[in-house]
Length: 106
Length: 121
Image 1 (spheres, each protein chain N blue to C red):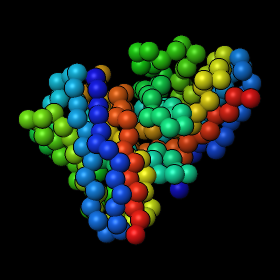
Image 2 (image 1 turned 90 degrees about the vertical axis):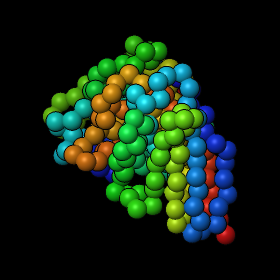
Image 3 (image 1 turned 30 degrees about the vertical axis):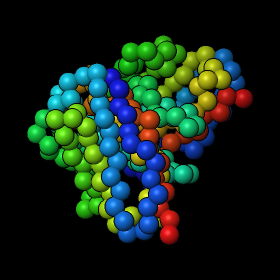
Image 4 (image 1 turned 180 degrees about the vertical axis):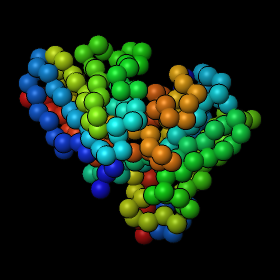
């Protein structure tokens, strides 16, 4: 089982907002990040330190954190956003990972 | 920043696999290099990292004792050895570097293309 809990799947209509949560007892005082992985491709970092976007990541991707939950929000979701999303945090002497959420854009 | 990994491998159970990650486009010794595993039907899993400046490593407890990550500063290449292979180690392995931050807790932002390892008798 994973250290961090994510919903296995989230569905969203094109143009709508998708929210993916990540929760864990040990998440509260740690920075969370989010990776996107499309089928057959390498992962891409889309959010780091809870809410920062790396260069080149579209503004529709945003992150937030409160208590023991981090959230990735995709506004105006596009078909190209369909992918697996993973949250990660650095714990005490360990890297914590979520099990991944499959985002489907219907 | 470019990370180019070695090609796919087929190994027998109990064997060792070595995957290389050739880097370019940045100062090799300045940033941590991570390794991840993605097994079919499973999620991403972090395996460990190396500080190329001094060779210090930090491994996931899930792979401790079976994984060794080394950095060769003469060729700007990082290697990941995984020993005592079992069928469940069949996966794609990725190297990834954190190019924007020198803290060990900053997640990597550049990834290699992945190396597929198949473990089969």
